Amino acid sequence: MSSRSPHHPEPDVVALVMAAGVSRRFGSDKRRVELPDGRTLLATTLATVLQVYLRCRLITRRDDDIELALNAFSEQSELRRWEAEHAGDGLGGSLGDAFRHLIAQDEAAVAAAVVLADMPWLKATTCAQLNRHARAERIVVPCHKEKRGHPVLFGRDFWPALAELKEGDGARAIVRANREAVHLVDVDDPGIWRDVDTPQDLAGSEITEG
Image (cartoon, rainbow, N blue to C red; front, side, top):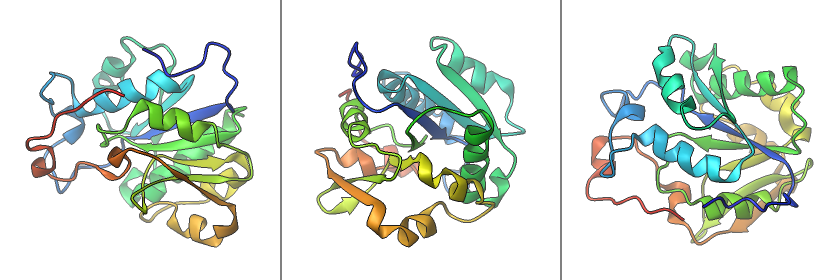
């Protein structure tokens, strides 16, 4: 069941699913690993995101084979694949590419939700809750048990600065430089800070929808 209202009263937010990493710590392409229900890690994250976001952009490496994107496209026409030219320079490089795409495409959204592709426990209801707080001048950050996580929603006022990123481990410096704009939202969802770095992170963990 979709978490979107039929009248879409919430602010318009576009999702950026960051899937351009190389999975060094996992030891293989973790996006393709199958979970207990038979879905891949990437498909699970996308299924959650596509319940909530009218538009979703899958960010992958330039040298990814198209089969990965086509599989993701198979059931959802609202999903588009964008290439990250600077993926080899870390998450910051991929984020910079993603936001340059957003600006070049003149996306009309008030904010962009940065979703990590390896977070299969994230709840759709959490994404919907965060969307209601989106504003152009805000950086919306979820918090569970006083620990921050993802997705982080960047209002469009911050897109030009994000588009300047070329390397590094993400957008932490931009968040730190704009503390007054950070809007924390308490959520009942430990999935906001549970990602998959190694095969052990998946051991004995069931994925539930919500």
